[in-house]
Image (cartoon, rainbow, N blue to C red; front, side, top):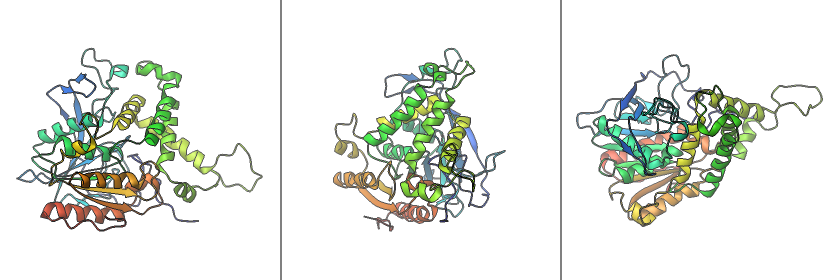
Length: 405
């Protein structure tokens, strides 16, 4: 049997990194209440917004050693360390810590739960300031720009004057790209992994099917299910299973499962017997239901669909023209990614070059599909170290790696 990695799925903080030794990092979970109303792209305004975040390392005297890490669709701020009562480390623990790719002896690392989520930052399950009942169907639609504007406010509240780099994969990579335009005076570099300038038609199609699964669950009740005792668990679980398939590659599924049965048996084949891949998807669907809110899945997956750097900025060239000439971008593709194929990351670099901006492409050579940004630490660590060194020392030597351009 071929070796298989820990079964980490895209942005699931509850699994994975099993091969990593127990980290020594202390978890610094905190909450910040934004004192000002937050205007949104949809024209509505949120007030009394709370942000949950974690930090590692220390902000230096010049307040210019910050790294902002952005999480993916169903992730959270717990990117490293072990939370009280938990047994597994954060979803990027192998990259964050003393001497690691994001070296906390050198950098002040910040990761915040996204706006619209359900892990401590204001979202659909949060109390509405008008009546204290959950927002539910009253929660407004969001864009990636809305998410980043709130994160920028948090960075300001933390006293961060300059950000070495904003780093993220998938939805986190979309956020990183928006940071370069929305906060150009502070962001010195961007690392985007498995993302795009605008969400593709294929990605939008996958997200639509997931949202429809939730909408068609009778327990969804138009989004106002919190006090009913019935939640759209089946719809959310199905949405998760659909998403997980897009995070894999055909080779990844073959290596992990092939046609192996969930229980070994020498008896004649039973049509009702589950294959390992079926049991796995059902388990992961149920796992998400235990830790995530269906309305948050709807809001955040739609925010991904709406992601388009050019929208409202005239053209893509005009949008990227707002990125300062000194800002550097590292776009990392994944060779087997079917959700964000490498060409999308290469397109980021080409567009930035056309706008006269600094950008480098590197590629993770991996069979594990989109999930590789949570698995291929041996490839990510040197890429991040070398790129951050060029930002810190002011050089621009490029980043070595498979597919570097």
